[in-house]
Amino acid sequence: MGDALGAPVEFMSLPDIRRRFGPEGIQHFAPAYGRLGAITDDTQMTLFTTEGLIRARQRSRDRGICNPAMVIWHAYLRWLGTQGVQRFDPEFPAQHDGWLYQQEELHSRRGPGNTCLSALGSGEFGTTDRPVNDSKGCGGIMRVAPVGLTAREPFQLGCKAAAITHGHPTGYLAAGFLAQLIATIASGHDLEAAIASARSELRKWAQHEECLAAVDAALDQASSANATPEAVEHLGEGWVAEEALAVSLFCALKARDFAHGVQLAANHSGDSDSTGAITGSILGCICGRSGIPLEFLANLELCEVIEELGADLCGTGAGDDYLRYPPW
Image (tube, rainbow, N blue to C red; front, side, top):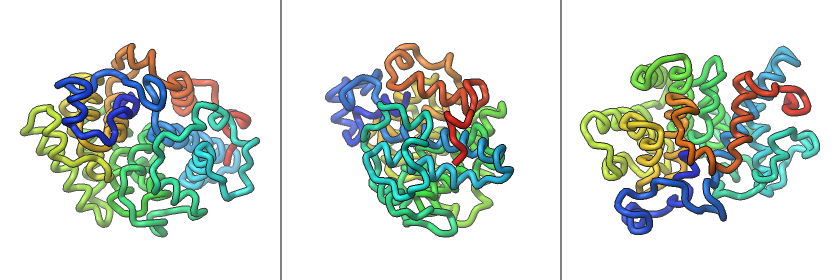
């Protein structure tokens, strides 16, 4: 929802947003990519993260052993195929790609990040120990929220999932922070406790200082500033991981409800769809489906697919059978 709200105003300055949508900025879905409620690469890659988690669970049951990050990498290669890029590995032919890859609407370019495209197209499996590049763009953090719903070690797997394409420590540590945050909220804790838990885990990792400074800046801003676009912009534009995390934490902390939080996250000069997506992930975990305005649900692209995939991840859907989610 936050991704779709921010999509029409990504790359627009705050003055331009206000000129187009009025002094309050964008408040409802507006046309992007030829329709209302269009998702971007942020949601596309989040869906393939989810599929990778389900397939990793399937593989663990089937083989008794599994490297979840490797299976998520294979999921991202399937996403790369939806972008019209020839995948390098012949072991994963299209006819075996399962249910998600077969959703025709996903076979559409929605502003994919060059870092994700180049890293996945390189044929290299990026890890925290063997980084594929030195990028700390927000393309790693914006897609990892589902890790927090099921992973036993969410911070670690969040880092590994992001490091597949983003090798700078700040890039993957911000993703680990978000995954840990989601996991703690999902276990029944409030946002403040979840931030404290993720912050504590972050401090255990080498080269955490830049990410920790951004988290602390968000906390300071939330305690002293009003919920305004100008306050959001004080934390950055969100193109890099630590800024996207800081903006999203501030917006989630200041949110009166789900809609207010994602509206705040979308109305700034910068990566509005990514900060909207991350904020939406946090507030969605807090508020649940019942807290999301019906107008968002009614107009969101691929809403049924998103809900079906989420239900399968959490064990309340059709299941993770081999035809739907082959274990590789």
